[in-house]
Length: 321
Image (tube, rainbow, N blue to C red; front, side):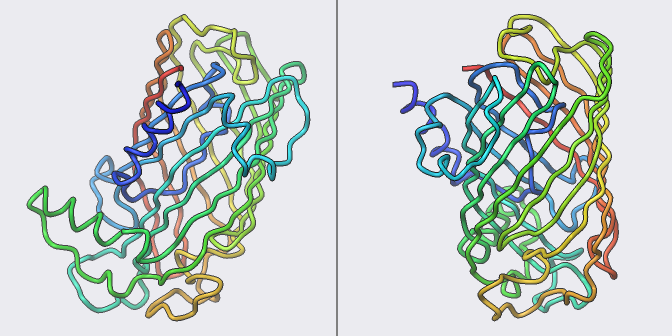
């Protein structure tokens, strides 16, 4: 019965997903100390008073023991740590240039692009040595089939905003198949009030090839992000976090077009891609009983030579199940 309810919740959200930056909820500051939860992530550059590159997004995920039986979880490699959780997420990513008022492609600007995919993931935590290893596989579609044009047009119509132009120049349909591994290790912990962690990530596939290294600082009052589901599940917690990260980019289909389909009318050439980027994210989290609330701001340096940095914000809400 529970499995049916959770699956229905995800299915209802499927058509409502909008445009989003890639979202990773396996990092320590995103941890929820329950065996099962439902989480909704909303991002929008309205929080930074801009409307470029990517403007809004929703990611919906469920973590629950029944997900272990999902067929794609058999492809997820992980160490046999003492605390393992499995999850499924639906994610939509959409990208636009600095103007949506022109029918022509804006040369030197970001291409229109939209992606929609299912993310299957596992988080294995070593609660003794304070480390976590996560893997995920993403399967879906980039291109008009992801519904980016219809999504943005419908939202702008509902808000009586300008009708978007230029989606005819978007990256064309292609398959998404990506595999990602993440590792996090706690370096220093001062009780429930301070934590310093390092993390590394490697991703390969048809949508995005990149590697990253970063660190997380958490200050406030919180349970260990490398603990089990027992700790603090019925108490109040509040903290702030900071997460700087450097990325090395190998390939980005939202900029360069799909791997198999080379018919996209406009893309950024490989020579103009910024191969090293910097991201920073800071946020505030409050947890009460089994409810998780978060507000955050993110910064990303320019992704291509003629581009600019981008800032956006977002909120998350999660419920233990």
